[in-house]
Length: 110
Image 1: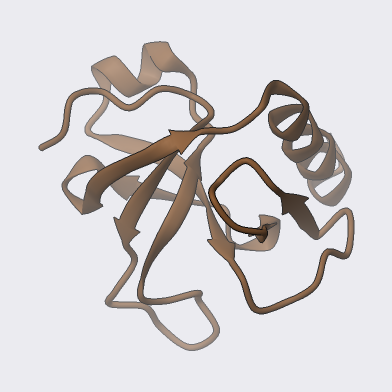
Image 2: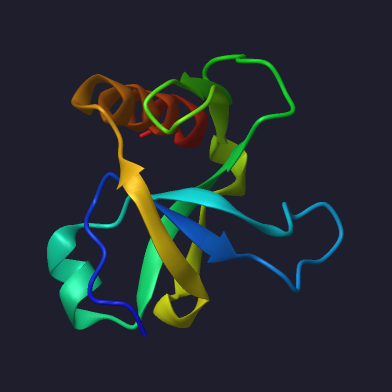
């Protein structure tokens, strides 16, 4: 199991097995759960990234700081066990993390 990931980090995450319309494969995901939870729980909350669709806020938030252009697929937010985390890729820019937070507030009506 990897060391506790931190909020805003991007990790390769093994999302399979997936069912029906759940996003699948091993792909980059942004860790969104709080650092306190990340230390004390065996799961983390992540949002998967994709390079296929185009940006379409608030559902698909464009990101540039992850190496190549990608979108965060906010409606695929999920908790995963830390065992699924494979390798840290980097950290989002603070402006991008705020954009994800804003998008989640909108689609979840928080």
